[in-house]
Image (cartoon, rainbow, N blue to C red; front, top):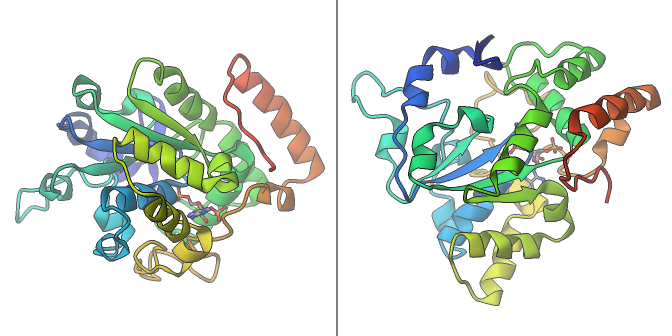
Length: 287
Ligand code: A3P
Protein backbone atom coordinates (compact mmCIF):
# COMPACT_ATOMS: atom_id res chain seq x y z
CA UNK A 1 0.00 0.00 0.00
CA UNK A 2 1.48 3.38 -0.92
CA UNK A 3 0.64 7.00 -0.09
CA UNK A 4 -1.41 9.43 -2.12
CA UNK A 5 -2.43 12.91 -1.05
CA UNK A 6 -5.64 14.73 -0.19
CA UNK A 7 -5.29 18.52 -0.02
CA UNK A 8 -1.56 18.12 0.60
CA UNK A 9 -1.92 15.50 3.38
CA UNK A 10 -0.34 12.07 2.73
CA UNK A 11 -2.90 9.32 3.24
CA UNK A 12 -2.99 5.66 2.32
CA UNK A 13 -3.91 5.07 -1.31
CA UNK A 14 -7.27 3.32 -0.63
CA UNK A 15 -8.39 6.36 1.40
CA UNK A 16 -7.36 8.70 -1.40
CA UNK A 17 -9.17 6.61 -3.98
CA UNK A 18 -12.36 6.66 -1.92
CA UNK A 19 -12.02 10.26 -0.84
CA UNK A 20 -15.38 11.36 -2.23
CA UNK A 21 -17.12 8.77 -0.05
CA UNK A 22 -15.17 9.84 3.03
CA UNK A 23 -15.79 13.53 2.42
CA UNK A 24 -19.50 13.00 1.87
CA UNK A 25 -19.94 10.76 4.91
CA UNK A 26 -23.23 11.58 6.59
CA UNK A 27 -22.69 11.90 10.33
CA UNK A 28 -25.60 11.70 12.75
CA UNK A 29 -26.00 14.07 15.71
CA UNK A 30 -25.26 11.34 18.27
CA UNK A 31 -22.09 10.10 16.52
CA UNK A 32 -18.95 10.40 18.60
CA UNK A 33 -15.63 10.82 16.84
CA UNK A 34 -12.37 9.69 18.46
CA UNK A 35 -9.61 11.58 16.68
CA UNK A 36 -5.85 11.11 17.01
CA UNK A 37 -2.59 11.44 15.15
CA UNK A 38 -1.46 7.79 14.72
CA UNK A 39 -0.01 6.16 17.85
CA UNK A 40 -1.32 8.73 20.33
CA UNK A 41 -3.45 6.21 22.22
CA UNK A 42 -6.45 5.70 19.94
CA UNK A 43 -7.10 2.18 21.17
CA UNK A 44 -6.76 3.23 24.79
CA UNK A 45 -9.31 6.03 24.33
CA UNK A 46 -11.62 3.67 22.51
CA UNK A 47 -11.59 1.15 25.37
CA UNK A 48 -12.32 3.85 27.93
CA UNK A 49 -15.23 5.19 25.87
CA UNK A 50 -16.65 1.74 25.19
CA UNK A 51 -16.50 0.76 28.86
CA UNK A 52 -18.15 4.01 29.95
CA UNK A 53 -20.93 3.62 27.39
CA UNK A 54 -21.43 0.04 28.62
CA UNK A 55 -21.37 1.00 32.32
CA UNK A 56 -18.10 -0.87 32.91
CA UNK A 57 -19.38 -4.19 31.57
CA UNK A 58 -16.16 -5.84 30.32
CA UNK A 59 -17.97 -8.71 28.63
CA UNK A 60 -19.98 -6.37 26.42
CA UNK A 61 -16.76 -4.66 25.40
CA UNK A 62 -15.31 -8.01 24.38
CA UNK A 63 -18.08 -8.51 21.82
CA UNK A 64 -15.62 -7.98 18.95
CA UNK A 65 -12.00 -6.95 18.37
CA UNK A 66 -11.10 -3.26 18.55
CA UNK A 67 -11.12 -2.51 14.83
CA UNK A 68 -14.56 -4.09 14.33
CA UNK A 69 -16.23 -2.40 17.30
CA UNK A 70 -15.22 1.09 16.26
CA UNK A 71 -13.97 1.34 12.70
CA UNK A 72 -11.84 4.08 11.19
CA UNK A 73 -13.85 6.53 9.13
CA UNK A 74 -11.26 6.80 6.40
CA UNK A 75 -10.78 3.04 6.05
CA UNK A 76 -14.35 1.79 5.82
CA UNK A 77 -16.33 4.20 3.69
CA UNK A 78 -16.94 1.69 0.91
CA UNK A 79 -19.95 -0.59 1.01
CA UNK A 80 -18.98 -4.19 0.25
CA UNK A 81 -20.27 -4.77 -3.28
CA UNK A 82 -22.65 -7.56 -2.37
CA UNK A 83 -24.55 -5.68 0.36
CA UNK A 84 -24.35 -2.02 -0.61
CA UNK A 85 -24.07 -1.20 3.11
CA UNK A 86 -20.80 -0.15 4.74
CA UNK A 87 -19.59 -1.23 8.16
CA UNK A 88 -20.33 2.29 9.40
CA UNK A 89 -23.91 2.22 8.05
CA UNK A 90 -24.51 -1.03 9.93
CA UNK A 91 -23.41 0.28 13.31
CA UNK A 92 -26.21 0.91 15.80
CA UNK A 93 -26.55 4.40 17.28
CA UNK A 94 -24.92 6.01 19.08
CA UNK A 95 -21.96 5.27 16.82
CA UNK A 96 -18.38 5.71 17.93
CA UNK A 97 -16.11 6.23 14.95
CA UNK A 98 -12.34 6.68 14.93
CA UNK A 99 -10.26 8.84 12.65
CA UNK A 100 -6.64 9.84 12.11
CA UNK A 101 -7.65 12.65 9.77
CA UNK A 102 -6.40 16.15 10.56
CA UNK A 103 -9.25 18.45 11.47
CA UNK A 104 -9.44 20.19 8.11
CA UNK A 105 -10.25 16.85 6.45
CA UNK A 106 -13.00 15.76 8.89
CA UNK A 107 -16.25 15.58 6.88
CA UNK A 108 -18.35 18.73 7.25
CA UNK A 109 -21.41 16.75 8.38
CA UNK A 110 -19.76 16.12 11.79
CA UNK A 111 -19.66 19.88 12.37
CA UNK A 112 -23.10 20.52 10.84
CA UNK A 113 -24.49 18.03 13.37
CA UNK A 114 -22.47 19.46 16.25
CA UNK A 115 -21.05 15.98 16.98
CA UNK A 116 -18.81 15.44 19.98
CA UNK A 117 -15.13 14.71 19.37
CA UNK A 118 -12.59 13.25 21.77
CA UNK A 119 -9.07 14.12 20.68
CA UNK A 120 -6.11 12.32 22.24
CA UNK A 121 -2.64 13.81 21.76
CA UNK A 122 0.77 12.42 22.72
CA UNK A 123 4.11 14.18 22.85
CA UNK A 124 5.87 14.23 19.49
CA UNK A 125 8.97 12.26 20.49
CA UNK A 126 7.12 9.27 21.91
CA UNK A 127 4.65 9.46 19.02
CA UNK A 128 7.36 9.07 16.39
CA UNK A 129 9.03 6.18 18.23
CA UNK A 130 5.73 4.34 18.55
CA UNK A 131 4.91 5.09 14.90
CA UNK A 132 8.30 3.73 13.79
CA UNK A 133 7.70 0.38 15.49
CA UNK A 134 4.17 0.25 14.16
CA UNK A 135 5.20 0.98 10.57
CA UNK A 136 7.90 -1.64 10.78
CA UNK A 137 5.49 -4.29 12.01
CA UNK A 138 2.63 -3.25 9.74
CA UNK A 139 3.05 -4.83 6.34
CA UNK A 140 0.28 -2.61 4.89
CA UNK A 141 2.26 0.61 5.38
CA UNK A 142 5.09 1.54 3.01
CA UNK A 143 8.54 0.41 4.23
CA UNK A 144 9.57 2.93 6.90
CA UNK A 145 13.30 2.65 6.17
CA UNK A 146 15.95 3.30 8.85
CA UNK A 147 15.23 5.30 12.02
CA UNK A 148 17.16 8.47 11.09
CA UNK A 149 15.33 8.79 7.77
CA UNK A 150 12.04 7.99 9.41
CA UNK A 151 12.55 10.75 11.99
CA UNK A 152 13.25 13.19 9.16
CA UNK A 153 10.04 12.15 7.39
CA UNK A 154 8.02 12.61 10.60
CA UNK A 155 9.46 16.10 11.14
CA UNK A 156 8.63 17.09 7.57
CA UNK A 157 5.08 15.77 7.46
CA UNK A 158 5.82 12.94 5.05
CA UNK A 159 4.26 10.08 7.02
CA UNK A 160 0.64 9.00 6.73
CA UNK A 161 -1.59 11.82 8.11
CA UNK A 162 1.03 14.50 7.55
CA UNK A 163 2.52 16.93 10.04
CA UNK A 164 2.13 15.95 13.68
CA UNK A 165 2.30 19.67 14.61
CA UNK A 166 -0.55 20.68 12.31
CA UNK A 167 -2.65 17.79 13.58
CA UNK A 168 -2.36 18.55 17.30
CA UNK A 169 -2.62 22.32 16.76
CA UNK A 170 -5.67 22.04 14.51
CA UNK A 171 -7.89 20.30 17.06
CA UNK A 172 -6.48 22.46 19.88
CA UNK A 173 -7.54 25.63 18.04
CA UNK A 174 -11.01 24.36 17.20
CA UNK A 175 -11.85 23.17 20.69
CA UNK A 176 -12.85 26.73 21.52
CA UNK A 177 -15.77 26.66 19.10
CA UNK A 178 -16.55 22.96 18.70
CA UNK A 179 -17.49 20.17 21.13
CA UNK A 180 -13.97 18.75 21.42
CA UNK A 181 -12.54 17.14 24.55
CA UNK A 182 -8.75 17.38 24.28
CA UNK A 183 -6.86 14.70 26.20
CA UNK A 184 -3.13 14.20 26.66
CA UNK A 185 -1.57 10.73 26.78
CA UNK A 186 0.83 11.86 29.50
CA UNK A 187 -2.01 13.06 31.76
CA UNK A 188 -3.79 9.80 31.18
CA UNK A 189 -0.67 7.87 32.22
CA UNK A 190 -0.12 10.02 35.28
CA UNK A 191 -3.65 10.08 36.55
CA UNK A 192 -5.86 7.70 34.61
CA UNK A 193 -8.81 7.82 36.99
CA UNK A 194 -9.18 11.61 36.68
CA UNK A 195 -9.08 11.38 32.90
CA UNK A 196 -11.66 8.58 32.86
CA UNK A 197 -13.92 10.89 34.85
CA UNK A 198 -13.35 13.72 32.36
CA UNK A 199 -14.37 11.42 29.51
CA UNK A 200 -17.40 10.21 31.45
CA UNK A 201 -18.59 13.77 32.08
CA UNK A 202 -18.04 14.75 28.47
CA UNK A 203 -20.22 11.78 27.46
CA UNK A 204 -22.84 12.99 29.98
CA UNK A 205 -22.69 9.71 31.83
CA UNK A 206 -22.66 9.21 35.53
CA UNK A 207 -21.18 6.07 37.07
CA UNK A 208 -20.53 5.09 40.69
CA UNK A 209 -17.00 5.19 42.09
CA UNK A 210 -16.46 1.43 42.03
CA UNK A 211 -17.32 1.26 38.32
CA UNK A 212 -14.94 4.15 37.62
CA UNK A 213 -12.22 2.22 39.49
CA UNK A 214 -13.02 -0.84 37.43
CA UNK A 215 -12.85 1.02 34.12
CA UNK A 216 -9.52 2.52 35.16
CA UNK A 217 -8.15 -0.93 35.92
CA UNK A 218 -9.58 -2.53 32.77
CA UNK A 219 -7.92 0.15 30.64
CA UNK A 220 -4.48 -0.06 32.25
CA UNK A 221 -1.71 -1.05 29.86
CA UNK A 222 -1.12 -4.40 31.56
CA UNK A 223 -4.79 -5.41 31.41
CA UNK A 224 -5.31 -4.24 27.85
CA UNK A 225 -2.15 -6.00 26.71
CA UNK A 226 -3.70 -9.31 27.79
CA UNK A 227 -7.14 -8.59 26.32
CA UNK A 228 -7.39 -10.22 22.88
CA UNK A 229 -10.31 -7.94 22.00
CA UNK A 230 -8.17 -4.85 22.64
CA UNK A 231 -4.59 -5.84 21.77
CA UNK A 232 -4.99 -6.47 18.03
CA UNK A 233 -3.85 -10.08 18.41
CA UNK A 234 -6.70 -11.09 16.08
CA UNK A 235 -4.96 -9.36 13.15
CA UNK A 236 -3.19 -12.07 11.13
CA UNK A 237 0.61 -12.35 10.97
CA UNK A 238 0.38 -11.63 7.25
CA UNK A 239 -0.56 -8.04 8.22
CA UNK A 240 1.34 -7.53 11.49
CA UNK A 241 4.87 -8.89 11.68
CA UNK A 242 5.07 -9.69 15.39
CA UNK A 243 8.74 -10.60 15.18
CA UNK A 244 9.26 -6.80 15.00
CA UNK A 245 6.83 -5.63 17.69
CA UNK A 246 3.48 -6.19 19.29
CA UNK A 247 0.74 -3.59 18.97
CA UNK A 248 0.69 -3.05 22.74
CA UNK A 249 4.41 -2.41 22.76
CA UNK A 250 5.50 -0.46 25.89
CA UNK A 251 2.86 2.12 26.70
CA UNK A 252 5.27 4.50 28.44
CA UNK A 253 6.11 8.17 28.57
CA UNK A 254 9.76 8.89 27.74
CA UNK A 255 10.65 5.81 25.69
CA UNK A 256 12.04 8.26 23.10
CA UNK A 257 15.11 8.56 25.37
CA UNK A 258 16.03 5.02 24.30
CA UNK A 259 15.89 5.94 20.60
CA UNK A 260 16.95 9.54 19.97
CA UNK A 261 20.66 10.31 19.90
CA UNK A 262 21.59 13.57 21.70
CA UNK A 263 22.14 15.23 18.31
CA UNK A 264 18.79 14.01 16.96
CA UNK A 265 17.11 15.31 20.07
CA UNK A 266 18.75 18.73 19.71
CA UNK A 267 17.78 19.10 16.04
CA UNK A 268 14.28 17.85 16.77
CA UNK A 269 13.84 20.38 19.60
CA UNK A 270 15.02 23.23 17.39
CA UNK A 271 12.56 22.26 14.67
CA UNK A 272 9.80 21.73 17.24
CA UNK A 273 10.26 25.22 18.70
CA UNK A 274 9.70 26.74 15.29
CA UNK A 275 6.73 24.59 14.36
CA UNK A 276 4.99 24.96 17.71
CA UNK A 277 5.73 28.61 18.44
CA UNK A 278 2.70 30.50 19.68
CA UNK A 279 0.87 27.39 20.93
CA UNK A 280 0.19 26.51 24.51
CA UNK A 281 -0.53 22.77 24.45
CA UNK A 282 1.06 21.48 27.68
CA UNK A 283 2.92 18.47 26.26
CA UNK A 284 5.38 16.64 28.47
CA UNK A 285 8.09 14.32 27.19
CA UNK A 286 8.80 12.85 30.63
CA UNK A 287 6.78 12.46 33.79
P1 A3P B 1 3.83 2.29 22.32
O1 A3P B 1 4.19 1.87 20.92
O2 A3P B 1 4.66 3.45 22.79
O3 A3P B 1 3.83 1.17 23.28
P2 A3P B 1 -2.74 3.79 18.94
O4 A3P B 1 -3.79 3.00 19.61
O5 A3P B 1 -3.11 5.22 18.69
O6 A3P B 1 -2.22 3.11 17.71
O7 A3P B 1 -1.51 3.93 19.96
C1 A3P B 1 -0.75 2.82 20.31
C2 A3P B 1 0.18 3.23 21.42
O8 A3P B 1 -0.61 3.39 22.62
C3 A3P B 1 1.21 2.16 21.73
O9 A3P B 1 2.33 2.86 22.26
C4 A3P B 1 0.47 1.35 22.80
O10 A3P B 1 1.30 0.53 23.59
C5 A3P B 1 -0.13 2.50 23.61
N1 A3P B 1 -1.23 2.07 24.48
C6 A3P B 1 -2.30 1.34 24.17
N2 A3P B 1 -3.06 1.10 25.24
C7 A3P B 1 -2.45 1.70 26.29
C8 A3P B 1 -2.73 1.81 27.68
N3 A3P B 1 -3.80 1.23 28.22
N4 A3P B 1 -1.87 2.50 28.46
C9 A3P B 1 -0.78 3.09 27.91
N5 A3P B 1 -0.46 3.03 26.61
C10 A3P B 1 -1.28 2.34 25.79
